[in-house]
Structures are given as structure tokens and as C-alpha cells.
Length: 233
Ligand SMILES: [Ca+2]
Ligand SMILES: [Ca+2]
Ligand SMILES: [Ca+2]
Image (tube, rainbow, N blue to C red):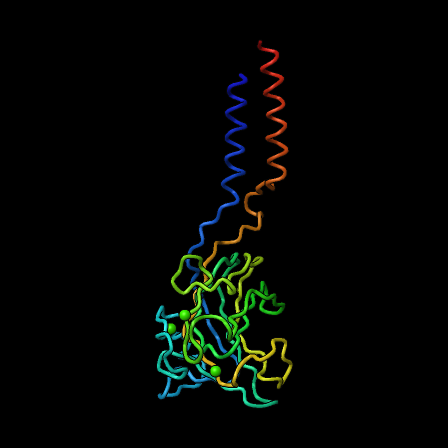
């Protein structure tokens, strides 16, 4: 009897242990849209959402390559009153985001945010103009430890539950509502955006006890096992 209980306790503790590990996998987007005025591909300029597949085609513009090319989405913010461009990525359902790869014109800073409802946004990370090895031109940055493009400062704690992600530049050089100082030179480009994570389980389908509860339950069983062991001696 007590061997069975000890086995159960060991099994439960194993479940608690494996619960904390994550297997981040690539998350695909069900929709990508842009707001403002931007060019998808250059010099054959297209304006509008039609060419935004460039952002998720798996192709990263070469390191140091020019900010405007047929592999980038580019936009300008050269004064107060100009549009505030941003790009919204819909993951289709709720996820927890663990990591990103992003290619940007790296003499600017790009803010990456997440949202459940496409209305209220939280900061995920910033692709800052000081990151990476490229001073001017396209630069791939990764938050994945071990990736050859890994940038520790880009790395972040897991997001909260998120369905939407967006990339935007909040003004430039003091113009507009700048929350990030020195965001860049007014000419911006994004070449690729990849995210990794896992589906968010809100617990509505099959309630999973919190680790703390499981630990308490396990501790109780250990005690019970002790009592059973004493009684059977
Ligand atoms: Ca691309
Ligand atoms: Ca790089
Ligand atoms: Ca720039």
C-alpha cells in the first residue's frame, strides 16, 4: 500500500517539475496588416497591405544590406503630423510568446508589443538602435540564446497571454509622443518578424491545479505515506 502511495507522490512531483519547462515552437500568423503609409519592396514601390508577406516569408535581408530593397517594408516619419506607422500580427488565438527573430534597419529603435484584444497593449521588448553589430543597414536580431544573431538585451521574459503583436516606431528625434529617446533617423525598415512560443491554456477546457496546490497535495501524500509506513511496520 505505502509503496503505491510513494509512487504516486513521485509521479506527482514529476508532473510539477515538467510543468515549468516550455517547448517554444514557431507561431504562424493568420493575418498581417499595416497602418499608415509604407512601401513593400523597393524600388518597385507598392503601397498597402498586399506586399506585407515580405515580413513573414522566412527571408532575412542580408546583414548591412540597404534599408530599402525588394526584401523590406520601409516607411518615413519626417515631421510632426506624419502618420504613425505600425504593423499588427494576428496569431489567431492566444499564445505565450517566448522569443523573437527580427530584421530591422538598425540605426532606429523599434518597439514590440503584445495584446489580447488588439486594443490594450503591453511592452514585449525593444529592438534598440544600439543593439546588434550593424551601424546602418539591415540587421537581424534574435532573442534566442545560442542563435548566431543572439542579442542579450533583446531577450525578454515570457509575454502574458497574447493574440496580437505589433511593431512600431514612436516618433523620431523628439518629434511626436516619443516614449523612447532617439528612436532613429526618420527612415525605417523591417525585413522579417518571427515569433516562438506555445498555445496559451486558459484552464477552461481541463482545469490544471497550480504548482503550489500540487506541491501541497504532494506534501500531504508524503505525510500520508509516512503514516502508512509506520502503521505497517
Ligand atoms: Ca522577409
Ligand atoms: Ca545581426
Ligand atoms: Ca533608419
